[in-house]
Every structure is written in C-alpha cells, then in structure tokens.
Length: 240
Figure 1 (cartoon, rainbow, N blue to C red):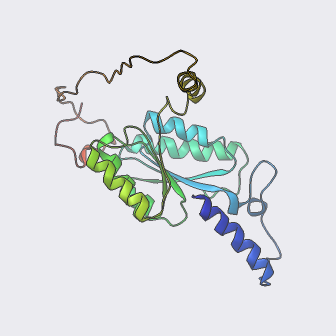
Figure 2: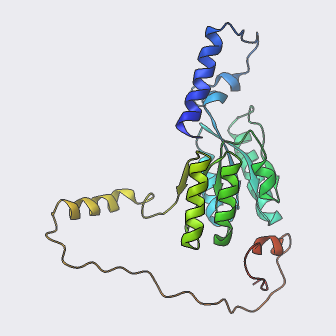
Figure 3: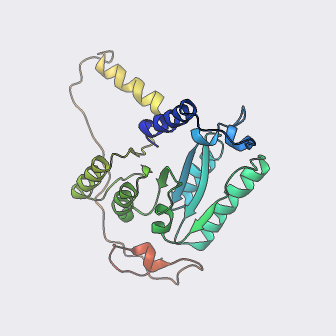
C-alpha cells in the first residue's frame, strides 16, 4: 500500500463523516481496532507468492505485526503452501485475532493477484519468475516486496521499472546487507564519506565465480510439487 493509498482511505472516512454518512449501529471490535491492533482501514493486507525457506521467514516476521493481515499464500508445492496457510491461521487463532479474514492458499499466483482485497505481495519465488510476477503484480494494482536478485537481466530490470512507474506502484527489493545489517554498513559508508579512514586509494569488489550450467542428475519430483510450473519460463530440465 503506497502512502497515497493510505491517505485516500483516511480522507474517505473523514469526508464520509462530513457528508453525513451514518455509521452502523453495531461495529465489530476488529473494525474499530484495539490498542494492540489497528482498525481495518489502517491494516495492510498481504499475499505471499513462493513460500519456501526465505519467504516463510518473512511470513513469520509479518505475523508478529498487528498492522498487517496475511490473507493469502501461493506456491506450486502443495506441502509448502499448506504449511504456510496453517501457520498463519494457527498464529492468528492463538493470538486471539478472531476478526481475521482467514488465509487462502493458491497454486497459481494469478488467482492471488486477482483478489482486490490484497494491498501488497511479498515475492520470493525462484529467480527466473521475479520479473514476470512483479510486472503482473503491478498490473493488478499491488505494491511489491521482491527478494534478490531482482532480475536476471538488465532488460528485465528495465521492464519492471517501466511497469512500476506506469501503474504507480511501490517496489522494494531485499538485500540483507542493505536492510538487515543496515547499521554497520551505514557506519562504514559514513566512515568513508567523512574521510575518517583517510583517502581511499583503491576499491576491490568481489562478485563470486561465474555461473555455470546445472549438471545435477534427475530425480523423481517430491510429492505435491508441480515441477513444470516451477520451471515456467526456464529451460526444461529434470528435477533434482
């Protein structure tokens, strides 16, 4: 949800009062909010696309935030999406969030994006799906957090940028060295820029070894995994 969206919701509520729209006689506690939970108009509804190790960690973190409502998860692996869905529902139930709308599980990300009650999506699919899903999410009016690497090619990144601007979306990509450990890296930047470490003469950059073709042998796909969907636009190869 972009800041402009949030303001629009608040403005609408304020203007509705001015124009004389009547409030219902009975309003649920979940709608009005509690001290530990904002009202529905101030909560961010999220969908998670790809709930493997990385995104499951994000999901558990967002479950602790009272201003967030996780309403949908999606994965081509039925085991992973069922575990994610159960985790959301069980956590909200244990926390007494009886007003939560529940969490739906989807096999196809198109079905999740089609929902008009989702403000933003958290994407942590295999890398070759990032550009496609981000662009589709922009078209669907969702804001996006997408895991690194954001794209596989410069052209993909350009198309994603164009989509974000065209549809006026908010997109953030994750990098642990920019976010999770922001304190120490920010201090390092400040040391350099302020001259505290002296004049920088040389900079060495490590980017790892070149990529190579995957030569792992083929195995039977794990139960519940739609391997063809997982591959998507990637070259066809056996599961390992």
